[in-house]
Image (cartoon, rainbow, N blue to C red; front, side, top):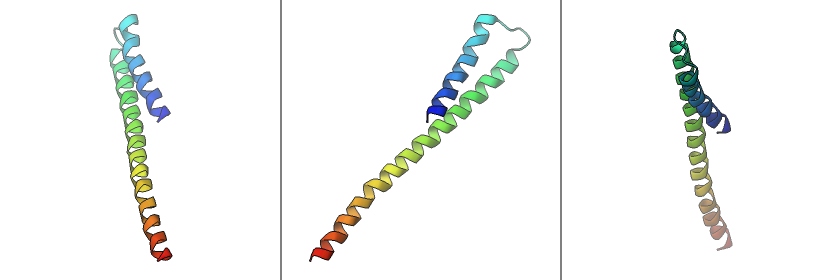
Length: 75
């Protein structure tokens, strides 16, 4: 997740950098670098978020089964 945030910030910085330096012939390179960096950052951030949600749902479901099994053993 931190790597995703870092790449998103780097992509935004790569978008802002050419605005101040005005590269006339290199604008396509800066555009491609910034878009690829931003998209990779979003992919990493999204996959980390999905993994976190899935693990939380799995953890939320586990204790319920353990409680039911312990009640059956006590009876």
